[in-house]
Length: 333
Image (tube, rainbow, N blue to C red):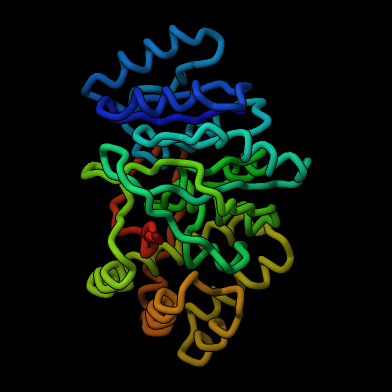
């Protein structure tokens, strides 16, 4: 198991994250890390951890230049050769002791079939206080639902080698995040998506989070309405365009679904309503799905044409603003 860790000005919480690696019940792990241009004490912490774990922790040759979080993680993914499984890790959370063990046990039965594991989280504050849980996902995860919502939070995400090769081999759409894109790619290519209802991470929500909120769903929905559909729908077009460019990797059903969705996005109201009748093209809750349907129906076709672009080249970085996701962690008591 190779842990892929991207760091950036993370000195405040990084030691706790690293300590949770060494506390794992599954001990056959290595850490492959790169720093994304930190200016605080992150590098000394990482190099001390590397020195204390010889043979188990290695800094990537690409470490240093600022790429942005998503491109930094995907750079690590492309540079991690020969790993049986890879686990993304943020720098500010705490993994529960069974996280890697549960992921390994869940992925092993897939064999050579691409498979992606993700799980629920405990949502905690900066001091690790709190017992709220991220949402359960009652619907079966897969494609094309993955175009509408990310359920694979990066701090829980683990992939086997066939899935990692698929994600590493396709260009990343500009502005998207690495975990959502991984979920989209693996699901569209027919891989298994395994959602573990058992929480595996203390997800630390603090003022410097790139993505994340513990606000209740109605408040998040109101904020999404205020932002409007442009950012979310632009990302849908971009995701669809890159998948279409790599259509040979997709399953026949995924190619059919993708073609129908792209045709609907270029068409009028009737075509979009027809696309929404697909029961697999859904978000998690009624409120989320109503908002998504409204955005899908009302977006102007001209916006679809302006969203066309080329995949992001390796090494091209960008910031990933919080507004890129309609979905946020949903709290449950």
